Length: 455
Ligand code: GDG
Image 1: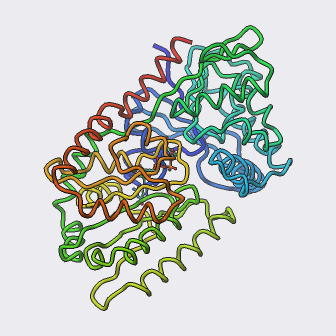
Image 2: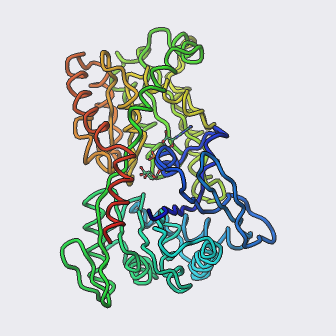
Image 3: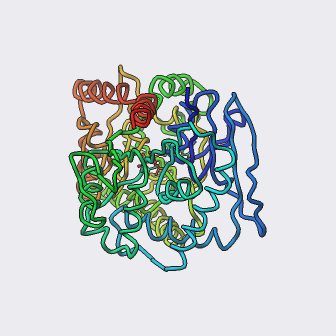
């Protein structure tokens, strides 16, 4: 059987270390990787003189191979092109996009370095599965170095229409790089169709159905929504809800409903509007004051990118403002933490929450929404409030769907959720649960690997 080689920018710490990480890709894949898999990527370290030879470690028969980045590579590839050009662009935030030619060159250089380091480890019949926007040019780089096996790519974040992509100077190069893969996967049909539209417009290749026909080759595009290990998460949540940690939270709530949000501290996640939505709930529906406490966990992320520092300051200010305006001496409405919470505790927090507030301005999928659903107690489930612009909204249609740009709509949905009857909560939850337990992480991986095998 062909060996699977996963390549992603960040490689999670081997499972046995139990370290917490707040990134969707690692969480989804790590629950699935099979023995024998090789997982290759960046170590997360920046060193003055990186050595090109990967550092190898093994855990549960999975081999992890990582390389370091030099400071210039880190600035141009990671902070620059990946996170200051592609990330905002592919989240429809043209105003935040910063493009410099040297950053794009650095992006190509690092992809070349990845290929140099990976190539000696590859066997001819390996299937290489590349993840996310950091590594779009990797297939070309591997082909240039002589790899002839199958290579697939999955984009975890949204894809944009041609009228947005055209703002990126190397739009054509990126599309040609995507067309060097055998299979290209997206979270939703909408992203897939935007990709096909862009491929037709920018590359000169022909689009036939869901395939792009390049010089004699066919690239198959698929929509393959990512999911979670729903059974596993439910189990962890149930167990965690009975621990002393969660009991401490319950005690501190004094019977009030908990609204919970958890994500990386990222401008795509819509936190300022959500905070304002919460403030409007308290102002417009004063009967809900004292009945609710909101807990926002926002794990710090990409702190070297200027926009993230700006966002953090804005949230500090908003949180202070809300608590200043609405707190009573025995009630603080908003609890805001920027530390990472261990995964088991997070699952328990989701389980006891009455409201899961997931309102990104754009999101490829959003696993938190699915985790919140899986964690609920079916006998007394909480209500999911979900952004229409998360990929997850295409599947989780029984959530209270909101436009995350409108704080009043968020406030109104919270008000509805707080007063929702058990019967309605139950009905909505059963439908959401079916979706989350059907489209799991295992299914996501199988669908992609089968498409790659067939390529
Ligand atoms: C990208 C795409 C797509 C969050 N805070 C903590 C914590 N988390 C965990 C969550 C969840 C994961 O991190 C975040 O996944 P998301 O999917 O919500 O978001 P991104 O990190 O932006 O992921 C996204 C995903 O890739 C997969 O394809 O869905 O659209 O942007 O599992 O629970 N985990 C812990 N502590 C925290 O404080 N332990």
